[in-house]
Length: 94
Image 1 (tube, one colour):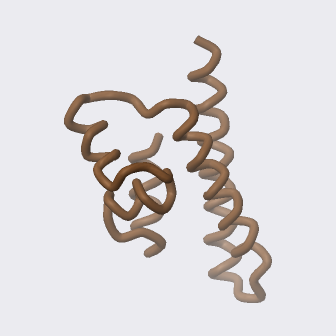
Image 2 (image 1 turned 120 degrees about the vertical axis):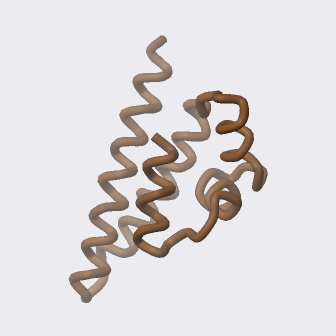
């Protein structure tokens, strides 16, 4: 899920590297995403929730814009936040 979010943020030009994504969106060490990939590990539900909250916060802010393209970005961030919330819930049920 986090890989999808990162790629979407990169496409929207809201994040330019895995290091920045780990720091700014996940509130983790800058090597967090690299470590997950190297170890073929899955992120914890807690980290996914952190990302969801950040996405939701930014999504709500952008959705309030007067500019349609920015509102669209906000809507997409809200959709990604919901997907992250769902993933965190799914993970915590096991």
